Structures are given as C-alpha cells and as structure tokens.
Length: 130
Image: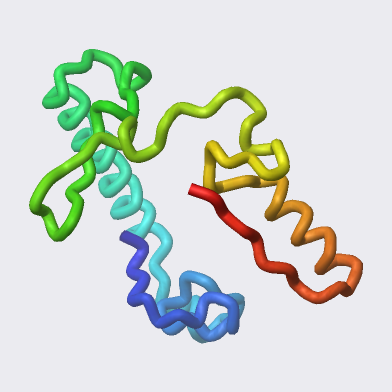
C-alpha cells in the first residue's frame, strides 16, 4: 500500500519509490500524507477480511483459531490436510532439546550452529529428523 514495486534495493539506499532510502531526491517521490491513508485503509480491510474468515470458520473469536481450522492443499490440490495433522503439537521446551526427533525445527541445533560461526569455525550442517 506504500507503493513498493519489489525492486529489491531495500538495503542499498537506492529504493526507486523512496520507501527505504535516506536519499532526499528519492524520498521526494514519497507523499507521506497520501500513503498514510492508503496504509490505514489496507490494514483496516485486511483486519476486516480476517474477521470474516474467522466467522466463516464458525468461530466468534480469533483466539479460538487452532491448527485444525486451517487446511493446506497437498499434491497439487488433489487433497487437503489440516495444519494440526501436518504439524503435531509440541511439548513445552521440545524445540530446545538436542537431537529431538519429534520436530524438524530444532532451535537448539540452529543456535549451536550460529555459535560455531561466531567463533569463526566452519558452518556445520544440521541433521533434521522427521
């Protein structure tokens, strides 16, 4: 809604729309007053659509939304599965246990790999189990 054109120059200070730059010449093309209204309207409509989907699911409160309410098309759309089936519930702390075979996103393994990189050691691959 701000006018991003996906030029992929966000980190170069040369954003052609003036959104992610400090260059006064590029920033001059960004009309903040107009864009503020567009961002507000976009956000308001996004929230409205979200609440419509919550109602369509049959819920009266978004806090009641659970993984089994959301479906994912599989195999080119030939069938669907709920996110509860795809991603089984986790026990508290289970992402931090080394070698946890219950979940493929072992945060502790990623943390350990980052620590090796900080010490200047070569990157190690992470063996994910499914």
